[in-house]
Structure formats: C-alpha cells, structure tokens
Image (cartoon, rainbow, N blue to C red; front, side, top):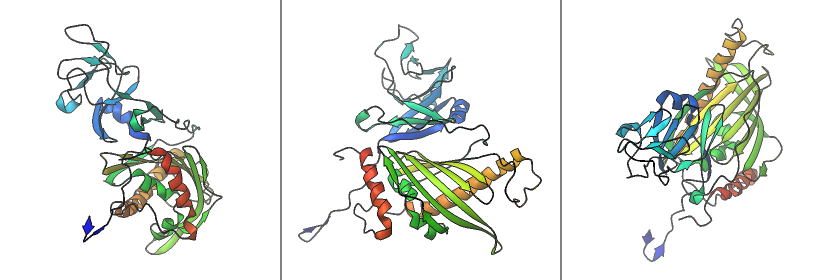
Length: 343
C-alpha cells in the first residue's frame, strides 16, 4: 500500500506448500471409508485401498473427460479399482486405467498419483515443488512390540507448517505458554539435510484443587523430517514411562492447516512409583488409559498454541535476543523446502 509518496511493503508471506511428506489419513480410516475425497496441499485428491492392501493417493480428476472421482459425485471402489462416475473408466492402485465398459482401456489414461509411505498405519504422500520426485525418505518405523495402539486427535486453524514446527526449537514458549519449568536445552540443534534434531529437558507440575500432586521430570527428543513430519521421543523419569508423539502439520488450501497428533505409550509393567487411580489396573489397561491422558494433555497444549498461531504474522526478519539462536538455525534449515524463486 502507499501513504503519500512513500510505498510501504507488506511482509511477504511464506510459500503455502513447502516441499515434503505430508499426512493423508490412517490406513484404518481409508479401509473403513473405502474412498476418501479431500483438499490436501492445495490439491483435490482421492484416496483408496485395493484388495491387496495397496493405497493410492491421486489427483481428483479423471484424465478421460475431467470428472471428479470422489464419492460425492458417485465415484466408487469396485474390485480394488476406482471407478469414474462419468463413463465407468476403472483405475488400479498405480493410477493406470485398466478397463472401460465399452472399449479397450487407453494406455494414456492414467491418474496423476502421489508417492506414498506408511508408518505404523499412518499414510503420507510426497508433494514436491514443481512436481519433482521425493528428495528424501521418511525414517523407518520405530521398533518394539510392547507399545500401545495409536491415539489420534486433529484440529484445523489458520496456520503454516513452518510456524508450527518452529515450536520444536522455541524453548522460551514452553515456559510462557505451557507453564513448563526448568526448561533446559540438551546439546545443540543437529541438522543433516532434511533432518533436524532438537532435545530438551523440563519439569511439569500436575495439580488438583491448587495442590501440586506430582511433578513430571521429562526428557524430549524431537526428530523433524521436513515440515510435515515431527516425531518426538519422550521419557518421564519419575515413572519410567516412555511415550512417542507424532506432530503432523498439513496445509489444506493455502490458508488452513490441519494438525494431527498421534501418541503411543510403552507398556507400563512396573512403574517406578504408584500412579494415582491406576494401582490395581492390569498393565495393558493402565497403558491404554495413560495414552488417553497423554493425548488429552497434548490436545490442551496445542489448543493453547492455536490461539497464537491462528492470529500471528510471519516476520521474515525477527528481532531475536541472545537466547533465540536456535530459531535462526531452524529458519535456515527451512529454506531448502521452498522454490528458489517463489511467487
């Protein structure tokens, strides 16, 4: 905008769709719904699973004559293939047209598909800048059989995955937004290509009627693989409890962001100290209950952040203080996920 003869430039917003792997849905949801249609990374997509368990994430556009393919317009999955509602063209899980009702399937009829990766039933797809192929791989599935089922929770708000992922290095907000105590950075941030590691210790008090009934002593290690995939390993030393937390931030349409939290708890066979109200529960049930408590606590934390994320503005040249050095490192790490010359 202009004031008199002086032109005032608005801060340039972040490019809305940084390159990377982004969450699509759980395998459980895909198998239950048969066919999913949604907006993802600014694209209209359809998602389905064939009879052999192969998942396909594809652009919601039939290359024959341009029909949408989702259930809202009559698209369906039959014998493992996606059937277009307009002329009955059938597509397999590779995106190839394999059948039409009245003529041989044209070889050139092929859906635009996104490469996928699955981790513990969480399905991710790659979106590259300019359509380029994956530039890195997501990590291997975390091992161990002694873990609970996954608990998930999601929320949508106005935001950007760089802004939300920046919390992984912003120790200061842990004190002022979430009330953590004794927040201590462990080592320095590690960056290796698309991978960033951030570690810190903190304490957190659990109160009832204003009385402190327990103080958690926590160590957290965050593994960031691009702006859509953050995996946090958490250990509470007092109980000897280990948890896993996935923080999955996915742009929807260039304005809205969907954040999905996923948590998992290692089986609590012999806690180091008694857990109030769970003393007589069997280990399996105790573990499931703790997982629900943890996802509820993470939900409260994220909603406290959402109030800020939903209203904040990106400042490309922040006025940092001496304790904010990690934010500068993080922002340099993020540069690799954007076009060299964004619009």
